Each structure stands twice: as C-alpha cells, then as structure tokens.
Length: 111
Image 1 (cartoon, rainbow, N blue to C red):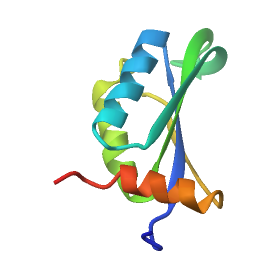
Image 2: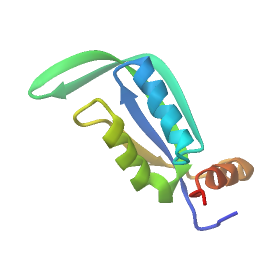
Image 3: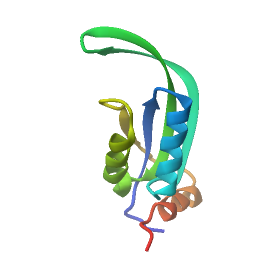
C-alpha cells in the first residue's frame, strides 16, 4: 500500500464504559482510526493535583496510521470528559502487512 505510512496504537482511558464506547465509535465513524477496542474495567492509580487517586476506568486502544495521530488526538481532547486525558501513542514496529494496509486504507480522508 502506501509504504511511507507508519502505524500506531493509541491508548486512552475513560471514566466509564459509555464514554469509552462513544469515543471509540466516533473515532471510527470519523475515519480517524480503523479499529478501536474497549476493555475494562481496569483500576488506575495515579497522582493528580498533589494526591494519589485510585479509580475504575475503561481502556480504549485505537489502531491508526501515524499521519492521523494529530487529528485523532485533537478529536479525543475535544470530546473527552477529563481535563487532561491520557492519550499515548505507541509505534507499531511490524505485523501482518495485509492488516496494516487495511488500517491505512481505513484511515484515508474521505472525499
């Protein structure tokens, strides 16, 4: 397919299943990602505003082309309920070429 396009897995957490599902569906519908997987609940322990918190969250893993990352990040920040949402991209170093081609094709801007 497009040889110079790389791929990333983008991990995001949300405070509830409904928000996670909505974020996943909206990103796929917008063509920003090829796939999103929602899992949870998970327990997150983190420091925020000087205190340690423990909360139940849901994880969303998005698969996308790396040239869509900035737009996906802006989309998620705009729609997420958190003041500072976790959005962490991890480069994909390899995998099934046919799957990665599908990810690229699925994330091309629509006419």
